[in-house]
Amino acid sequence: MSYREYVIAAYAVFAIVLLWDILIPKLQIHAALRAARLRQARKQAAPTHTPDLPLSRD
Image 1: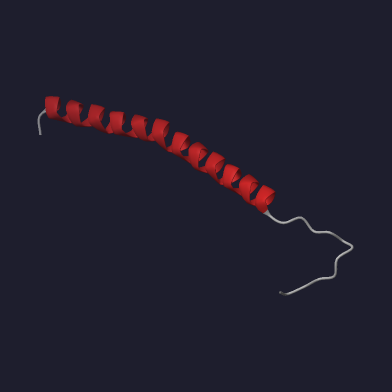
Image 2: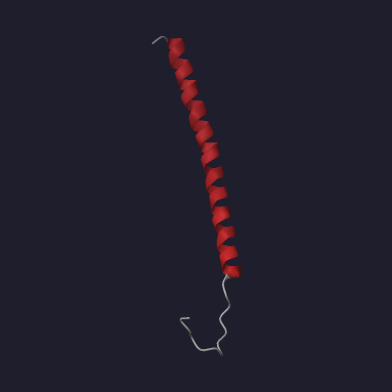
């Protein structure tokens, strides 16, 4: 491997790692926000408990 090929490979690895460091946190934030929105939607869609009614398994 010549010096030029080594430098090209080093820059390629640097670019891949840099893209990885940019992309992965954005995907994690997107997934966390989606999970929070789904959790909020489930919480709002859940039936409310009324304490004066007896428990039922119907």
